Length: 400
Image (tube, rainbow, N blue to C red; front, top):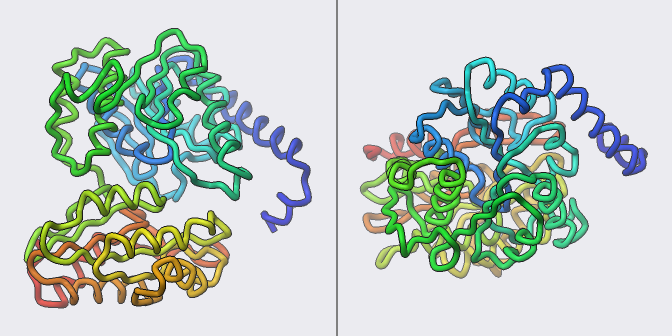
């Protein structure tokens, strides 16, 4: 019914509807962003990790922080799971969260800003003082009607933030985001940008070169807010990990890693990081349903076939689509050099039985998400990490 209503109502009316909700939410909660400094993080990949790094940097600077990401809500020392399955919640949720942050005495709030959220004006009537850009690669293409429109949505967010812009100088779209006016701009990168790894020599506990970019984004933000460089660097180096993001669930007798990666670019980087020098890489993956980015399903399969020694394609979040059809589309990209197992628990169990010491099992697509979403919005409680531990125990293996 909801989708039918969307099709029947003209786009301009839907846009006004969402904008009205954004204003109403801000009004009801007293425009809380005027009493707290709000930082927005946008891009295709890395948003959640940058929110975590940014929070740590601000806390190292002596500030009390509220943070909202796809995995959790945080106000000061209090944290709770984001079980909404929404990276950027609706207008009322966000404004309520900001109000709670103000009441708790937080000086800063850090939010993920998504392209879908921008389309629905969820970022409106929030006075962002900093906009951070991580990277951009094709995603939500069907939703936006093309990559240029997807990029333009992110651009509208930057256009509305007049304070500080922090931009990944080494991303192909850097020049596009640098064109928007701001009081101050910071650029970062491994080799280019005002803040780079050649100067800082960052030693992270998190895996992957891409996490160095994420850390540099947070350090740049810290500099923009007067946080001492030494404190900012120490803060990102102390971060132990981000739930469901390159999270090593099992270390021996073989490695098992869970990651959220569901875009081609992110999946490729995860595989490149984890590919063992010797031993097999066993990949468990799927793809979302609900008509979402069908173009990338065979691409994900192709990438898995390029890096993986054994590949299991399984169910992820089918929504109202036939999960077997989604699996077939992913498998087709791998030239069907895969094993297709519709039950995700069974797929994980199979991957674990295939692994021997020296191997790496990488399970992608869900990270620490607490649900599998099926038809008509039915949610099944889930956690890839917990499933791994349970199945290891059944196999008589001690989880380390």
